[in-house]
Length: 305
Length: 305
Image 1: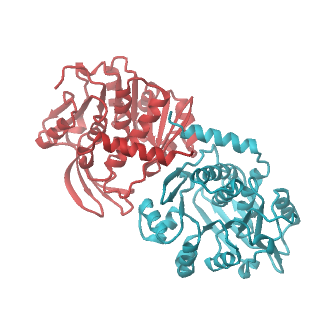
Image 2 (image 1 turned 90 degrees about the vertical axis):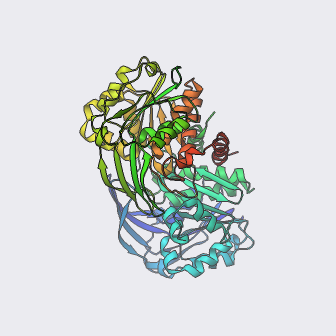
Image 3 (image 1 turned 45 degrees about the horizontal axis):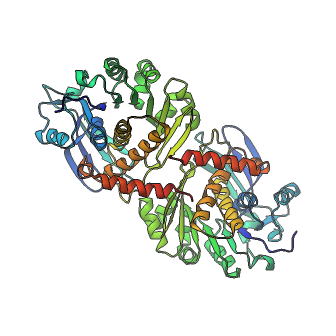
């Protein structure tokens, strides 16, 4: 573990996932938003993980985090079992049914930033309750860029802290249905304008296999999804997207419009690799050449002249 | 009516549509695939319409076609009533329910190319039965570029003539669900490969408000949809897209990869205007400056550096 500060801090859930698709069923896979996001971010920047696991968390998964080069000072280990989620995907590999959720140690998760993480310039607040996201933000010292992810649950049951969070972050990421739920508007361009009025500089509306849309006061960027030949497990795609985006931007250091757009394309590309296998399996073997090759391919798919 | 040959011939349905949305309900609107496609194409190229109307077809609609500059030598007038369609859109302005369909004179539509149209280099076969599309294709003399549109109905009930048609066209356009139905594959990139194996040089998979994907042996182009602030009537969006695409390409004359990609973006932009009002209302007042302005805006939304 390095004594240097990390460039990016990611907070979120660690889970052991049991996932069934038309291809296979796997038990106790390494999952959770912080696992996917940190693995993706670590391709580009030194990344510190803030999360919690139980005493049953396999040593091999901790070793895998370390092999990604993820800084684990912020990963807490508590008495009890690790968060578990089980789900089954429809044949379209998009819609899914949650079969079971066991919060376990995640239920009393009280994320705390280690001293070394507090001055990290980039912070990714993965999808946990807005109260906890606000708590992490309070502990951070003058971060340059804060991205918060959220979900429909918090829009429904924690609107007040969520509004407070949104007013304090640099960028909000959410999917199309969540953007509609948050604003009561149908057209995504209007949703985005309304969200910008709530405070953030940027909003990213994620559309799954259809890509994403970045909206800021300086304009719109249409982020294409790389068309994969086959999805084997879409779990964590949004977390890979956010993680690679923040990792790339933290690696650049400088937050320019061009860097933000390039970072979003890196997010799209890393997510496209992530869905090609279960858990972190594809990310484990991902090389800089793989990423650069697919970035060039994607640029060719966006090129007009 | 000019005695020159037309650059583009479009065949399809003319309809009188009754449409209900959350905004309004309008009766006997000018609709049908050939109306939308010719109106869009006429922004860019001299366009001949092949279709059929009944004796009840309003003179003002024929005048409107003429105001668009559409060549009407191929528009037949038959004893009986014009094709009528009635539908209601859900509040999402995407899903719709057909309330009634009256084929009327369209039931015995036997499209014939006027002599002047036979050497037209560009042909757009709008969504009619593949037997009729094949018949039109037989009458054409060495067309340079033929685009055929189709739909799930023909995939289900006329697979043999459809396969024959697909093997003879330059480009097939269809939506994502139709591509899946045609190939039995889920992933659109695989669907596209399988369709290319059936014969065409290009396949365009349309994804509605999510844009489209062009696939050819030389690569993939991801066509973004322009994000509109409000959809008032999505009817005919796919026909506007195809019409503006073919019109722009016919206007270029030269079928290069760059012209094909630019033509698709023009299709996307003209379709985005089309959905902002009922029927051809927005297209009526559309100017070259409107199109160029939105093209520049869209280019900004695709620009990385």
